[in-house]
Amino acid sequence: MAVLRVLTVCTGNVCRSPAAAVMLRDAVRAEGMGDLVEVGSAGTSWEAEGMPMDDRTVLALERAGYRQPFEHTASTIHLTELARWDLALPMTGQQAQALRRMVDQAPAGQAMPEVVLWRQFDPAGTVNATETDLEVPDPWYEGQKAFDRTILAMRKAVPSIILHLRRTLRDRGPQDG
Image (cartoon, rainbow, N blue to C red; front, top):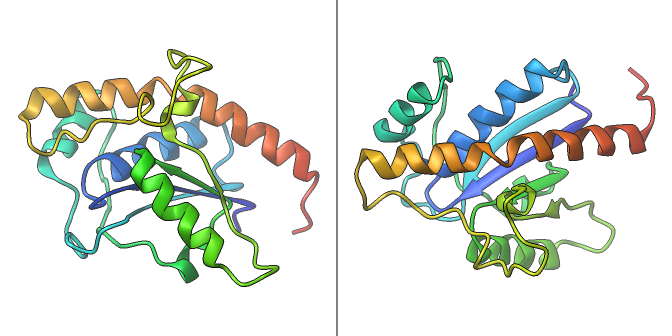
């Protein structure tokens, strides 16, 4: 059973967030944390509910060295589902705001996730950057090269996210199983 649950979030859950989940799952396994960290993805919009990962995202992940299968079905995040997660990593400030509104609507005492933009973990980000500065651009309306650039740019944040997950696990202490 996972000790720490991480949710990646974008708009439709067919491009950025499922790609982020693939990258994180790969890194979590490589770091030997597969039994401790669960990674999922969701969207803030219902429009793509039930759809597979976009083919351009699949190709960009493959070109970046990730291996199939990338099992994925788009889903929409709702308050009750959000409560299952410990850390939510949205791609944009607008998505972060939507998640924070849900967190604010949670019943008193309900555990809710920390909401941190994906690119806040990007070492190229600046200390004084705004959420808008740290957004992962949506490649949806562009061609394959935009998807390739997006995946390569997103990958830069993964090592820092893994460090954050390690610290969080350490701070939680030993888990009873």
